[in-house]
Length: 144
Image 1: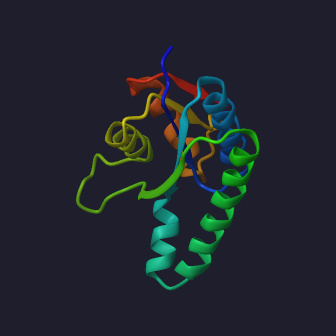
Image 2 (image 1 turned 180 degrees about the vertical axis):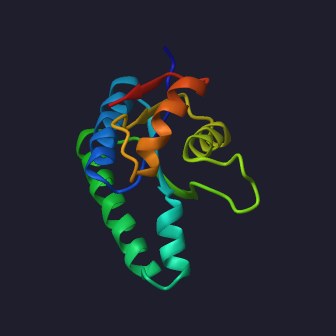
Image 3 (image 1 turned 30 degrees about the vertical axis):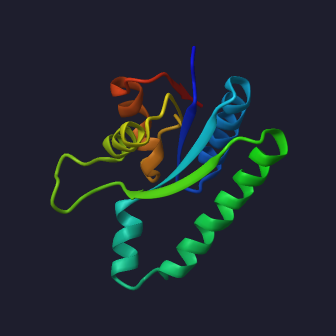
């Protein structure tokens, strides 16, 4: 199997941190790079829009989470580590779901492998995405 880029969709939860750790192991095993994708849940986006949540606080949490994962990656391997964020919904595109967002990004960046937290939790966008990603991904998927 030829794997050059591993996609790890995360939301900052403990489950997604564990999935990112598996992504690091896969990247190390296959001499691949990692792309950490923050999937921003609709509820969080709405709370930011309503002023209930400070977007700077969310950004700081995401940066801290990414820094922790980047440090773990750097400790075990010297590949490239990139990050991005995407909304798990769209007000204009009704078919956009957390799962479709993950697959769209996987296609856009040329991911060869996806590691996604499988423990579906109605509160976690990435957890809700897992089953969709497993069913429709064109690349291999490891669900943890």
